[in-house]
Image (tube, rainbow, N blue to C red; front, side):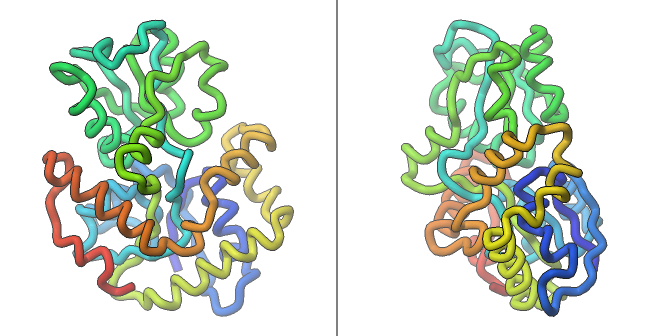
Length: 279
């Protein structure tokens, strides 16, 4: 069975056992390692594997064909994207009319940023520039971009680029809604057995927690030059109870984010009941 997820430590940690045949009743998996900005568009275009990791922000584009799997993804607290600048001016109004780099326009990070900016930046920001997330911090440091929206391990490394955090958008979201942050979702084509997929993904998560050393080599093989310490911090932050079970709080967070984004015209409006169909 074909599956696509990112090479980031949280994904390789979660899927290590399933990929390596350590879980009973898991079909042999053919893995494509792809950043979420690619899988977001693959799923929307009906391309790519039948099981994929995408951003929750991309769900409105794919729910007719794919079901949300209630485990294996990334959703939590204290793990949101950061908005960084090289400027010492830390007032939101500093961004009025400015160029901002984002890793994808179909990402939770982007939705959080646009919802925050609508409330906090007078007159709105200027040009939005999409670039690979690993290029954003150097571009902000070098003055090519006025501000950058960063995700993943950049939370732990942005100080190395002498950048300043203008806002932690995860903290803003949690204070505003009292809900966790929906980041990455696992989806499966609706022709597949969602219950079976949920079962073996959840078993892979539980195996990873019970045997944390088993996946170290696999994680570091794909960790994009991260140190073991940063990779572990990444896993500790993004793999949590919501990874094993989205639950009612997780579902409420997804519905709130996508409902608000739809009302702002940031994503297509859709029937929220599709989030639960097939679960």
